[in-house]
Amino acid sequence: MKTIYIDSDFKCHITNETGTYTSVETEIFDGKCDAYIEGYRLVPAGESWTRPDGVVFKGEMAAPWTDYTELDRAQRAYEREQLADAENALTILYGGAV
Amino acid sequence: MGKCYLHGNDGISMNFRIIGGTSAPSNPRENDIWVNTETEITAWTFRTTEPDSPTEGLVWFRTGSESAIEFNALKKNMLQVYPRAIKQYNNGAWEDITAQSYQGGAWVDWWDGCLINGNEVYENIVGEWVEVKGTVGIIEWSNDGVLLSYDGAESRHASIYSKNAIELTGFNTLRATITNAISGSTKNMLIGVRTSPTTSVVISEYAAGYTSYSEVPKLEDAEQIVDVDISTLSGSYYVQVGAGVATLQIKKLQLI
Image (cartoon, rainbow over all chains, first blue to last red; front, side, top):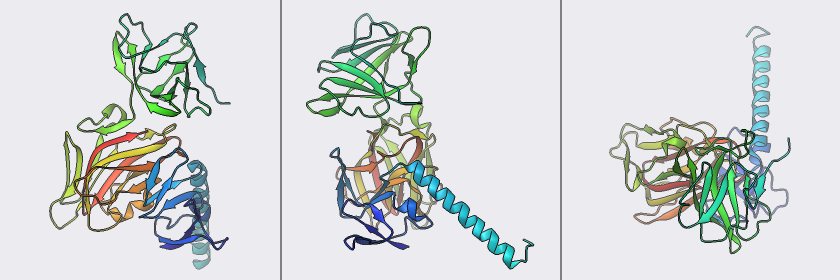
């Protein structure tokens, strides 16, 4: 579970940089990197978002607002870093013998 | 490679014809496309994404990388086209319309984006709807679509997912018509698309695995529309619907 922030267009933010965002506790981004999270729109239950073409989406809804392939690429790079960090930690713990 | 569109307002140089009207042409030729419309077709375009500045009467044939009605647009097999859906710009808005292609001596329906419509399950698109059930989960198909429910107190989960990853390029919305949604908790009824389907029977884990999803609001014995925004997605994704300790009746599931 983590706290993220959504702006007036329901776009997600890692920090409340303007002081005007709404905080949301959610588990749907557990394990996701900041770049991935900030490419998403999260409409909380009880609220709704109207897309520019007029279609209304009722919460809870989560969907990328930018090209998902870029978000996926960022997440995969993040996971590779995490794996490298874990492997380094194991190397240190076992003095090089894993 | 840059974007490539095929457009025009007549079919004189092409290996196909586009014919508008409310009844099928009586003397069709191979690759004729009959567009079922009362509105005059002023122009047409084949492209994967919505035209930026449509004019009245424009017919947009949405294309993809595969199609049940693919055809060669030019003579000598030089331009294969994969149409998937059709819209016409009428009174300032896009309208869903139907079309048929004359191929192999018969009229073939264009796909309207439906994945489930009553007892029609579109196996030529979906492959099959793969069922995932907990020990007391229920999945029943009828003329009213698919029911996901449970009967008992053990693993009360039911979900279905498309066996095929379905190309979403050019579609903006996954729309579900729901006729019954009963649940005692939140996030127990989810509809969405994923890069890989899940066979988990723990619905509370679902939300984090979807690329895009919507939670179905509780509404007993009444019809509601639940939309999922897929407008920024390109490529192929699995469509999955899940219900955990819930009863969900899906009458129709359609890509728009």
